[in-house]
Image (cartoon, rainbow, N blue to C red):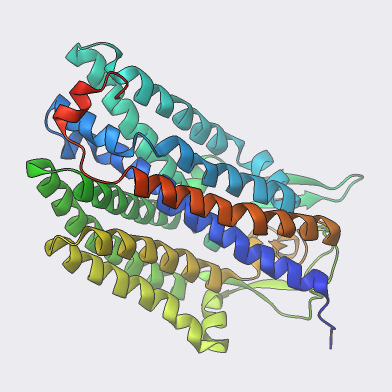
Length: 383
């Protein structure tokens, strides 16, 4: 029996922290992108669209910190994952990057000219830069469950070899997960607009919340049934949790139908995660109908945590499984940084993560309240 060392525990701690960062990204960045996705639908006039943009205007760029933290954590804590993903998935990464580059341009340039044509172009730019990143975000988790087409060349220096294509990454299950991500993003964006706008725009946002939530629940249910039948990944032999980061050491991994449910069967309390998603969406639905903004918003956040927690619980300890050569799959055990690196990162994370949470909470508290068209027109610095 292997003795669990501090190094193995650190790997698990960083797997949990990575999940926290992904949840923060989904909730905060997803909320802003959700507003961009529904901008043309919830805002029927130019004034209403400006109100929507100015509701998230003080926060959207600050929320990008979660995106940076997520990428930085993968780079530092899981360098093998970072290198393998970016070398094989670079087309998708560039697509994501380009869509996010035009996003700040949409905020900054939209109101520079008063012509409808100019503003319509930037409205659709904001739609694309809101919808596409969240679709890719969800598809990424879908591909974690399906697996990736890569292996490592063992001739000389170990180099990851990606054998798939751009289309491979948008397989049916990945698209399903992508649409689930978009629907939760729309929920969060609509919940934010519901709480900080008024009149007809508020009612349209509230209606979108009551649509997006059930849609997300249906997609989540379909995904769960699909996962129960798909081939997941599992170990068919002993694995040393204390092993160094070396993906070329072949692991005893096989694919089996229903393998992603093994952790739930072994630890039944994990079923609370998908149940949390159902409860949160149902509560959020009725909270929106009753016009309780705070409960609606927090229910959406909990739903995100439930979805990501369910995926994480199902796939642990796999991070980037390979279906072309399962033995080269990247797991929590064989793709982390050194113990010293993980200790240093943990120390700094314990300092800065609470600071970011406190600062973000303070910003939302200070800039709370309704945003009106009159307020936007009177402010020369408004979007």
